[in-house]
Image (cartoon, rainbow, N blue to C red):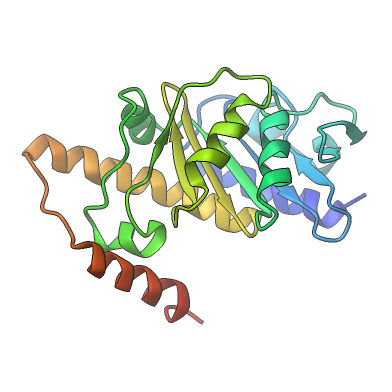
Length: 215
């Protein structure tokens, strides 16, 4: 079932190591099928080059396996919590990308100091509180942190990055952009106090990029 979505997820998972967002088997991508409401997610502990459509796991919104021969990701409960509480979300990505996670180890948001951040995130990338892996706690923090925010990404204190999007591809893009801007922010902070962008200009950047830019 959902063979096209499974194949798409295999390809999107390969973008994570390609963009240096993950190490070994860490990190995952999930997608919600808009017709059935079912979720396709990475199997737990399987290396990215070994992923195939057959290894993907289909779960319902409570995280119960509907189809698959592998255990679903250990983050499944949190993914499903986000989907249940944010109906506009169609894709979720989790990484431990290096520079963004460095900010997370300080419980520190990534400041909006570039026009690219204004475009994609509409402000700072916020950092949520600490939560343990394995249940819904991380999902609850993601929902709490991103509700009312323009950002499609948040950091988890001492853990890593979660991004959301209307599709899994857009969530992957947000994960790539999070790490790119985290690296820029880190380098800028090493040089001293970065210049800031006025909130009104950030709002205008975000509106142009979201509603005018591209095809």
